[in-house]
Image (cartoon, rainbow, N blue to C red; front, side, top):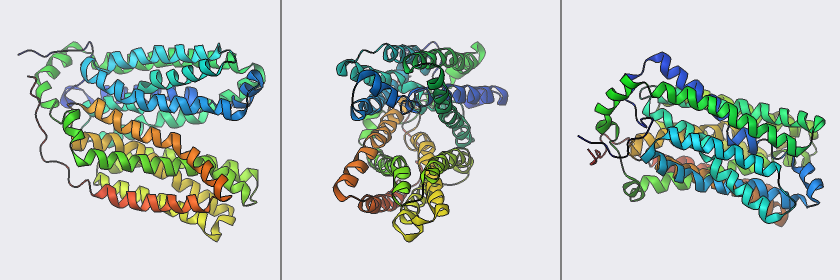
Amino acid sequence: MSYPNRPTYAPLVAQQDLGNTSKVVIVLGVALGLTFGFGPMFFSVVGVFLKAMTVSFQWSRADVALLPMLAMVGTAIGAPIAGYAADRIGWGKVIGYSIVLFAASLLALALAPANHAYVGIVGFLIGVTGASTTAAGYLAVLPSVFEARLGMALGFGMIGTGIGGYAAPIAANYLTTVTDWRHSYEIFAALALGLGLIAHQIIFRTLADRQRERKAMNALVDAQSGMTLREALANYRFWLLGVVVFLVSSSVLGGFVHLPAFASDTGLGRDVAARSAALVGVGLAVSRVGVGFVLDRVFAPLVGLIAFFLGAVAFAILLSGLAHDPAYILLAAFLLGISTGTEGDIIPYLTRKYFGKRAFGVIYGALFGCATVGAAVGPFIYGLAFDHFKSYGPIHQASALICVVSALAVVLLGKYPATLPASKEA
């Protein structure tokens, strides 16, 4: 029996072949990788350096703001490409290459001249090369290692994004007091490369144990049961889930980005605006750990229904007179964090349950790309709506409706399939 395209690190490892200690080590490696991946090392800090870059280039803030937007577009495109490649050569190689190229792209940004084309291309490349250092890459490893406790593993793995997302802006803000933005990006590039490669070794050296690999190959046919990308594209669940995560991501992330401005507009002061942004992060962290435990015990679409409905509650608060009370603004921020954090956990979980492992990488990458595009366009749409209506009211109403509809729609995914198509490659 032959197995074509066998990677250096087996992309699929039978759950029973790894002990609990090895599984814990892999989750820790995933968390470390996410701590020093695209989100914390670029997206969380680009805003800190925005003003300094405008001064350095003599550009408008809108010009520099295109950098993170193009990076998000690059990530949306890079995620399914990375998944497609990983389904053929393994996540070990794909994530390893991504770490090196992402760090090189950050270094290219540090050397950027005041040229719009150069900065735009580098921004896009940062997103494409960094896609595998996001949840789209690291979390894709876990469904091949965990079954009964997959939700818990996803939740603990995602802690890395919370730790990095909290610490990186603080570090970036400190760096602005001792050096310029160019040297700061050089430091972040070094961190992304060094700590990223350490995380890579922790994960894939654990998976590459020779005896486990040989045992895993005997179970490879069963592990590859599931849909191909073509079969998934012909399934209503793929499109339903893609539309839902796009809409929820665009509405919730748009509301989050503009929440400090909304709080300031209501006269609550800059301190409330700052605390509201922090509470979103708290909600995000709570949901990513808590939802991981819940997913292993509760039907996942039901978890999505509750989380998305909480997002609608948050927008309802912002639309009511309660929005003039700082406590309720902070509650709304917390609920938005829970909603978006839950979405991040359930995408890989639902992908595994409904589509299986056979083409997990590319299917998850495509759905992750839908959510990423939503995150990129949501804040922009919010800004357009505010400029047109001179108020956040209409866009908050639309967002509340989107969350309610999405909460109901996710239940239409139905029961988990009792069986999935078996691989025909054996």
